[in-house]
Length: 218
Image (cartoon, rainbow, N blue to C red; front, top):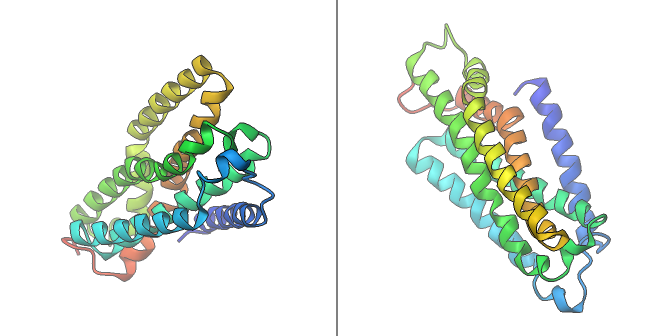
């Protein structure tokens, strides 16, 4: 991985650790009596773990070990960072932990996986294509990753902007109550784009350089 991508990983890790700590200490995610039953952190952690394992298995069966590792890493990163940022957001947006937002919060957080796949799969598709059709003497895996980020960016940006506009329109029309419901989803969209731009492609490149990539041109 590049030094730049490693710096992004460190930033994400720091934010994720802070958010989880605030949640565990109950400084963030302060649920009242009515909404407390809606958020079961243990169950949420298990769902996140299941999503990461699914990403690993799907990537291995559908592609190869490098893609499986990158997809699982992207899923884990995006889930933890979205959760952490939601915890931090709850400090300034109390409605996030109150009904009706509290009732939908776990489900909305798990929609992060969908955002991850929409962004990450596009980058990995282009990177795999480059790796299969070029020699490593001409194009390294890191170069393939950089090229994939650039080539997939227009489509990923369009997907992101359309989804954000829809969510923002719903929030504006529904007021603070709807804003509290869709806020974690907005965070998930931003986080998935951030990781697809700065982290996941270079995780894939590092893994591909160390593992046999299926059908790669040597």
